[in-house]
Image 1: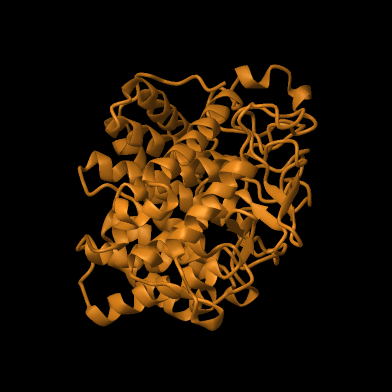
Image 2: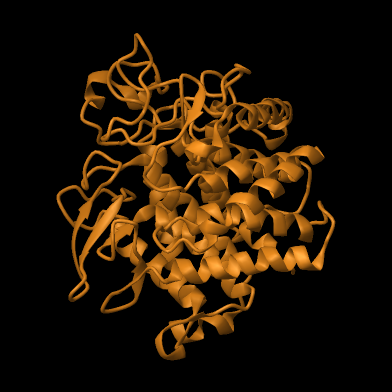
Amino acid sequence: MIEINENLKIDDFKSKIKLLWSLSGEKIHKIVSEYDESKGAPVFTINGKYATRGWTEWTHGFQFGSAVLQFDATGESSFIDLAKEQIIDKMATHVSHTGVHDHGFNNLSTYGNLLRLMHEEKIEYNKWEADFYKLAIKISGAVQSSRWTDLPLGGFISSFNGPHSLFVDTIRSCRILVVSHLLGHTFHGEGDKKISLLDRAIDHIKATAKYSIYYGDGRDQYDIRGRTAHESIFNVNDGQYRCPNSQQGYTGFTTWTRGLAWAMLGFAEELEAFELIGDEEFKHLGGVEKITQIMLEGAKATCDFYIEQTPTCGVTYWDTGAPNLHKLGDYLNNPADPFNDWEPVDSSAAAIGAQGLLRLGNYLINKDQKEQAKKYWQAGLTVFNSLLQEPYLSTDTSHHGLLLHTIYHQPNGWDHIPKGSKVANGESCMWGDYHFRELAIYVQKIINDEQYFQFTNCIKK
């Protein structure tokens, strides 16, 4: 269980975040100079150098979005120039990609961040350029919503596995539907049927909350409040839910921690976003309070589970039911050990989850639920503080990665195991590095009393 440091204050992070950005800039430039882009999108490091892994091209948004965040944090113009060049050159295919559930990752991390910087007056406003970013976001939201599976009540955005498959991580792609909707876009289907992107986002959130999250109410023998299933399987002939499954976790009845982290952050972000949407938009759905309660219950359950099922330092192992965890002894009452002989940690899950904890804490502060808010807020700071130190912060300037000890696909054995080790360790991944940077910019903006950082900032208020 995380030992929450109640004494951490946000100003304590100033110098540590400054070091992070210094290291981050060097690594962004090193990838540009040393990685062979003809091989495809960089995914994870092998011996400290980024390599690709063909499955889906879902990491370009994190690579190019990292350069945008670097500019946002430091004001160094070379990074925004680099980001724009890369985004124009390589992101168009991601906007129109009908085969993946990753639009909210790829396209808001790039086009969305650029549009946000315009509205925050960090870069010069240009109408045609802004319209270009808006069009990309609008189309991305519509394309993402087209991966739709109807259920007897509602439906969901199907994963790349097919229409039978709901992934827990896709909740973060709901962001692109919400922003596309706020930009005034609708998805047009057969017969010119107008389909609300907000309605589809809400239906997907409801399906995730119902089928991907457990609440300790006896759903099955492994029902623990806050546990998540990576994949939920449906009979597409009649829409019946069949069973939990997993692509990257140990089993459908254990909790893959990066999937857990996506849910933590996804619920918290949408709670914040829906605060900015007028009540009229929710009337036909029974009111905003109904969907807010669903999201809040999901956010609290997953964040509580993370706190309870993570080692004292706040950095989690890759799956809370991984088969060899018991060989580590009393691992929940000790800091995580990325160099152990039995199961790898996944610091990328920690970076994503920490932001979810902080956002939920901030949301509850604004709802005057101070005691609960403090728990989540301080837990988020505790996790972030651990990641900003070795062995997680990558201080080796020859290493391409920023956040060490991440895991992509443990069951498939894709992650690099260094010579002399028995489990994967010492490597980085694009989503881990990007979300480490996103976590840092989130905290930095609060320290500097800048506009609160959220994905809806790419909409002109």
